[in-house]
Image (cartoon, rainbow, N blue to C red; front, side, top):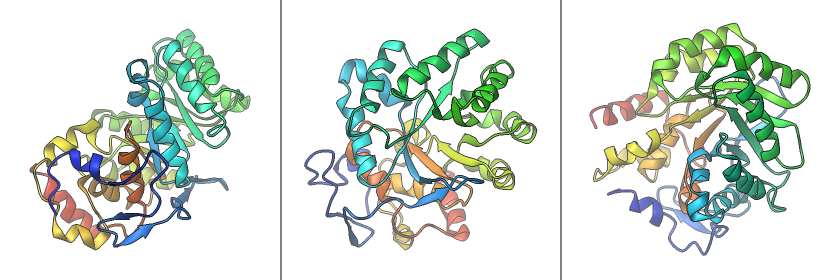
Length: 313
């Protein structure tokens, strides 16, 4: 099955008549029709009775396009996510003007109260971190309680973390955590996981960046932490590396229809992963990503084969 380039992602679900029209679309390798009644599988947040759908929306970069593209592309992706029971939206603080527009999207009647919004602090200095916390609360209009507050890339962690813990204690954040998107931070990240009380960790992990499965993901399981995954497509560079290459025939053995699903299937096969975050402004791409959650996932011998296939790309 030839997957020449990212155009395939745009054309993957031909016939969609707008963001909500995924219904009755046939995913080629699944051999069946995805119906409106099907919803994304969920996994538990460890230590709680709450579950999260296993595919979410990493909105940080798409939100930056609001000044030039408007809010509809982002709204369309969230609409598609909700169509199949998704609700995880991960974001980072941007300018107050951009966040104000994004906040209006999140507060729209069709979305309000239906999302799990993961926010972040990504600045230097305690005062600036407090300011970003208030900006996050303004983003989630109508509630001063954040679903998940994270310190992004461990930035100025020593200063921010005491406040983050205090905000959880005061009820201003339900869950707290830290993020990394760099293999170079994994050792420091592991040390922090072992030393502090966390609810969630977010890390980079994919078929081309499998390093987290050596220590971080097993540790998250041992500690009972929720796990969000970023960089499933290595910020888009993954598609450049697989461009022009044919998807292997044996990908059909785990119901994989595209190179995008190839990486996402690899990620979701790890039992420690709670939710994989995918960044896009194209509802069709989100529909393709959602399709990954249905059907079989690769077993460990197949995952080794997947790694071997991409290691030289």
